[in-house]
Length: 286
Image (tube, rainbow, N blue to C red; front, side):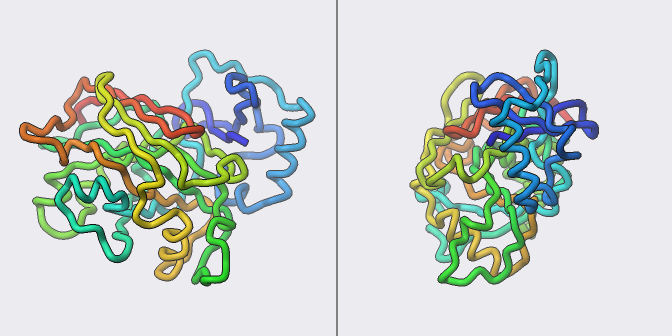
């Protein structure tokens, strides 16, 4: 299933994208929202699936309807840095021996087509297309003999917008360059895990002003999705509705020759992941 949330910010309603790929169906008669509580409730998800298969869900008029982030009330956004061989190489970094873990605050998450704000005094705002993993049941200390993917509710497109000067040159951790407002567009859909049989076989692309900048595949990940879920669960509890951004392939502005083409107000970024949908953001000054 492709689950989404539509409407004005703070007043989104739950919806489903029909199998025809164009028709929106209203889920508000069945569930109150798409959040961790729903994703952990197998019976509620089964009711949605049955109603969709039976053609019982009312149609929503999509004209002019904003798409919000597909998951509400996200507890935490865990991010994995330097997780593609080609991206580590382009930045001059050695491939890490263990996953590099950092956080984005949940309030950085916005809709897939919402405006992204270039921070004040920013000179190095950068793009990163990423596969987002959404947790569907509580994961703590996942064992070697368990399947980490059984804890995954689904997948989505994430844009891990980053300010490189804040991240790298201003001291301390990466957090200052990762947590500016609007820095995590998510969606358009949460695609349930049954529709993504192999998360290591997805193409990722990103364009800036129509020019292809990133063209990668999750097969190039240093640490697989399953490995990341297992690893992170050793250090923190992952709850339903938590999100893991799993890293970006090569092609970011930071890895380009001087003068590096960092983002500015007026730029348009578009990104997509195979089977998970497409985003489009116009940048404006904060």
